[in-house]
Length: 119
Length: 374
Image 1 (tube, each protein chain N blue to C red):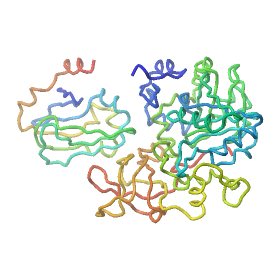
Image 2: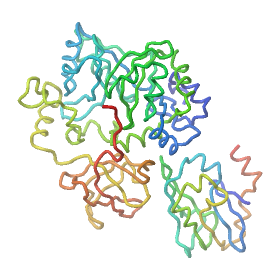
Image 3: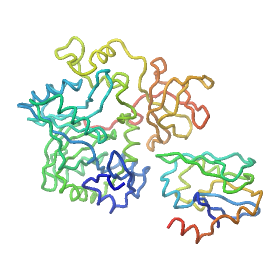
Image 4: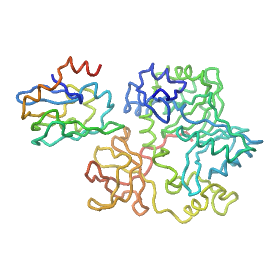
């Protein structure tokens, strides 16, 4: 598992990565009530704001962790955003991305570094 | 951050695991470990305990209740004089343009008026009353009492375990109850659309009372996040957002709070700041109104979202003043101002969200039915 400073996690699945947000992030955000996901097939660049999430209190964005193509999105999460709160590392995943430049993955944190980041 | 004030329940909030945020100069709990959604739903189905000690508690005292009431009627367009003993009423301070300087609750406590005002406005409100009412009427801020709110359908059962007389009170009654051995100034009212009480107690008694109430299995501590979503679903205005010094009570849909005796042709018509404008608007109508708004889909439309009358029109016709996700409604809810011709229930408007126009329907307020004990 790899992590970004924006509190996303990435888990390898074939030649793509499943992306979600960490439990630390969902705790900070509170109950999610709305998720707008990108379209499958979209080409995105690292740091593009590709997902809109809203909690009861506020809206925020999730950025593309690497350059690549969106290969799948979690429609169940769009229908029930609370999945991100109840199972952030499992059923609450957001999208799958196929990186166009695998070397960008090297810049991400491992679990130990992420745990240190959130202190 | 260090200059933030703390309420007498601050240590309890921290001990209960609250997430604290700055609000109106106070370090306040925005949510507890239960989370905004569950706190909201718990209050609607059982009972929630809120710390509202940041709000201003003020005693206005003249030679008699009538003297204090007549003084306040020069600042507030409601019938203070005719308010029965041990009864409470909603009101607001107005300005010369007919705008609202703050909204408040007034209670007739026999020989004085007890006033509760918003935290962010309390210093200005107190200065305003002192300068306008002196020397015959004395205005005293109560700084040694906390204010708690117990809200929800189980509130009566819970409070009656401490003093049976709680159950005898009706909506908008006030009484002095004996809660845990202390004199509590209690009103049967609140800011959630649910039955419930607001409870003023001496500072030192606040935490023991809060713990006693929280010991009841039906009571959970509730933060400011759920307080906001509860009042929004209940169609209640938040000062500084849905009403302010540029919105009149008539535009805000608060004409019901201006009793007939203060209106044109009656005994104590006018005599408050902005009376000409406000009374004229009651007679002849207004050009814009506060309305309820139900956005389509799941995306909340929040304060500041512009409203359009068509998908392709250039100029906005209005703005959302409060908006969030309504946990009981199960979807987004909002309020805002629109020109009167668009204020009819069922009118379709468009809110612009992240560059996209999304349909929103003008809806009746409240979004959730009020559950008061009349």
